Length: 200
Image (cartoon, rainbow, N blue to C red):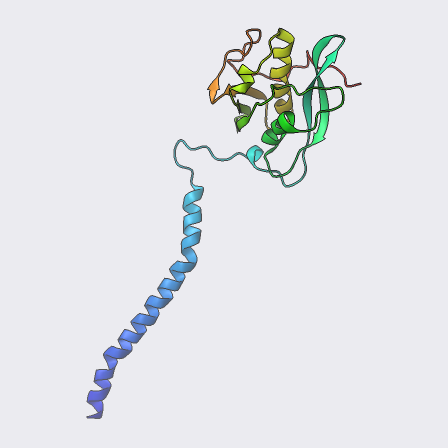
């Protein structure tokens, strides 16, 4: 009689051991699954660009040279102003936002047309693609000096940031060959100080 009771108890012990093993396995999966998901998401899919370090918000303040417009000897020129960029944005985006919305230095003007919006800045293999709203083109006032100052305010401001050698200006996500007919913009442009005047 005693032996039969021991024999009947054996399946229950096996069931208990199996249940404990299943609980332990579930707990283990619960701990390692998030790490598995993180590793999978870190693998860039074909054709996807990884975010470059230059596009991430910096951990410490960045000082950039911003190029504002100023009349010098009766001509429209650029003046370089050193300024600490606001935190929370990648340096290329923060620098252009300062040109569009930041404080304008004394005796200077904003180089981009009023109402211009920055849509996006991407940096790929040393080229910054700066995408603006249509106002960059429709708000242009005309004149070769005005066009050069407007375009090179963007180019020179970005080209002096780390990791950027050339700049391609886009309007509504598309390349534009020119804004006012005086300067070809169909290819990336590099820094040019021809229109830069010393700040008084």
